[in-house]
Image (cartoon, rainbow, N blue to C red):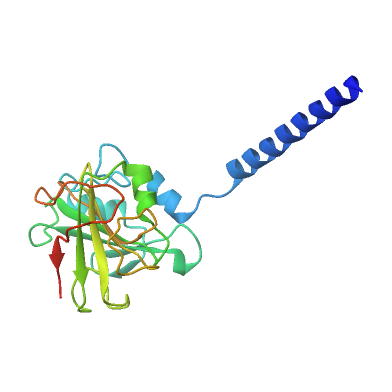
Length: 215
């Protein structure tokens, strides 16, 4: 009986190892999603994407790096990692002056497809936030979020080290005052500095005090 028990235990262990190895191999060979590819293209130190650094890289240099991307409108590009157009992100580049070629870019604004990029994705790459603010928005033209998103809703403005900032909302519970990893990111900004006047980060919890009421 004892040899049978040992054999059975060994078989279970071997089968478990095979299942684990198969799962690991499957995960390793799975293609990266557009979100994973975007995060992999971040460069150090932040803010930096594809060697474009807001505050340092000139507009002319940035345009040269991005010259192969489709242009949706002046200074707005379409960043695509897959053939499906629905997976493309919008990218807008702005300067702090009049878009002179030699001026350094002031900000890169990314807009992912709705519901594809979560606050948790940003945290996984950029670490814990350093500041945040939650605002109540009722008017379609307010709140840094397009009118296609229902109102009223709560909007979270969350900043990370390295001049990274996101504007996020909760599509499942629009009026929730809780900062949540599953909040959908509407905009992601890369800029030379963060918002020094924003309140400190209070964690993934209900925000007892609103930072603003946008009406």
